[in-house]
Image (cartoon, rainbow, N blue to C red; front, side, top):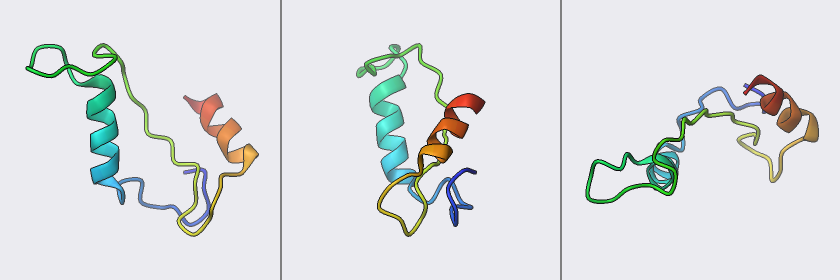
Length: 65
């Protein structure tokens, strides 16, 4: 966890699921994602009560990915 106050990375499951499906849905179904071979990593850098992400949080998440 990089963002302060952001303990639960799954609180936005609906939005995250929609985004993940759009990107990486396998090509074996009727609808395939734009990158069906992609591997996704969830890295939360926006805090629950903030309007932006700190540069340090973004850089730390990128380094860990």
